[in-house]
Image (spheres, rainbow, N blue to C red):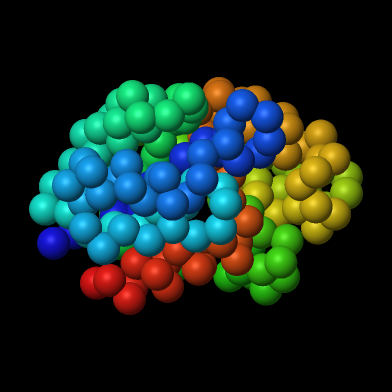
Length: 178
């Protein structure tokens, strides 16, 4: 069995994008995936599957969620091994930056992570490409960061961002299923 992590874009940020995590677990289970676990209320799902294609799993989950709820999120899927590579390759942690200021913008297949601003901002914010992600170092937070908005805008609307604590927690959950 392969352990996979699905990251839903824009779930439970308010308004019409609310999807209870219990319902999300049911939908993922109804697709035939096993050992389904969610983490916090923002569309993070860890599960096992005999499938090998993360792209196929993402498309299946997008269709099932749209058919079973009122939301139509973009879904990005990574294997446990791919997520472990993302964690290991964070250049900001490698240079000693505080993990509390790290984020990962996960990109769907076909989006180039190299199209990020190459120079850090005046406030110390920086971005770096990684394996299917753009790493962000945001020492003043993401909420009002024009730099983060520019990086996200350069990648198009399909990516989904997670703070580093969530990324590492998802890897821990995936490790527990491996």
